[in-house]
Picture 1 (tube, rainbow, N blue to C red):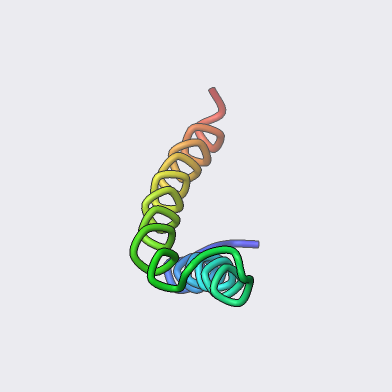
Picture 2: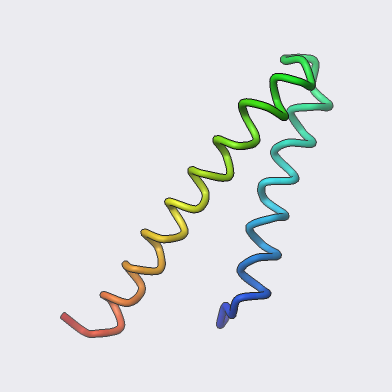
Length: 64
């Protein structure tokens, strides 16, 4: 499967949205806490992991 920008963005948003909706639906935390603390940290962590994954894929394609 080849990921282009729209596919990657849709998958990224879907995973983050699923996590946020799950945390809001569960009676663990207040909604304000999820939206102001958890969601931004999920987005930042996801972007860091996406960047590392892209770099690893570039490394793997060079055959080193």
